[in-house]
Length: 361
Image 1 (cartoon, one colour):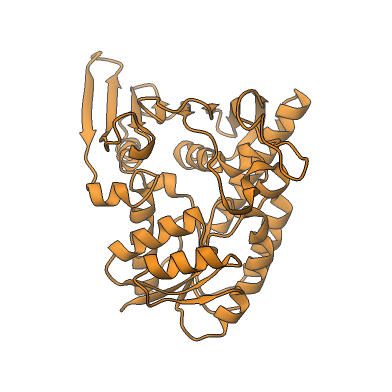
Image 2 (cartoon, helix red, strand yellow):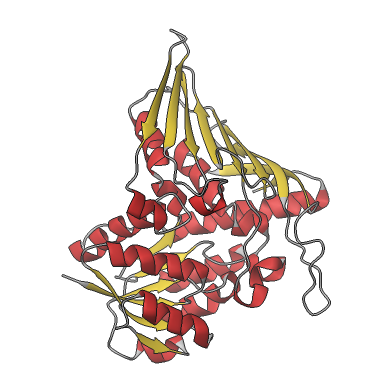
């Protein structure tokens, strides 16, 4: 069974989805909708020249050309689009964040109540091979009970996108929603508990300060420290810097329990490294009792790495979504509720950064 995909939004992330879908058996991009004519044409070309382009996604919905929908439009459009497409019988993969506000996320959950076809939120960081390896170690009991989780992302600034929509909190939800929803999702998944309290210290210190759009200066945060407390007593911490391009590891994700510490180390995309070459990721396990340290390189097919900026995770996420749709059974691995929680924590972090006060969920 070949799944015919219809894309709603075909900008930078939409192009990454198209490249990965063309690598996967049983997947074909047959329709693309985008208000920008240039992106529509680029999408047709990158999908092999056979996809039909639409200026309005509503026209695509009635075309009969698609079996599944992929939403990769700007964040602030997700709410309206989802309320429309949830009325269709199609499986849906929606890019993160689910919406820019938790209130809009709640609207979507209510609209999706009782829906037969699955809706999967694209939290692709779960599917980075080193993160999957870390999760396997936790499942095997290597660390014992996870008590602390520390995530560091030191990376390049937000990239230029069509219409510069990603420069403003009003359209993105804010950096701690737009970018960091991945990390709140990983914390909640890993620590197996819901967040109860959030404290953030953050600033706009380096990036985009010399930019102006219709007289407005970008207001998105470019660095932050955030701590999150969970109902089971575990704690998570994020160290984010968006002006650290060239860092050897773009992400490091460490989980520590009473037995051991496991850390996943992820390089950034090759196009942002000094030599332009892909690198493998690593997993490091430090055992408390024996003081032994085990390091393992995690290899990923270079074609998969080159298909996107997320260390192969988009490909492996699509693989799982495809299998779910083809089987017609089971539930999405990343639910609408997961999407709501990741936005709730991001909202709380943005509020805490502005107020200087911890926020209770």
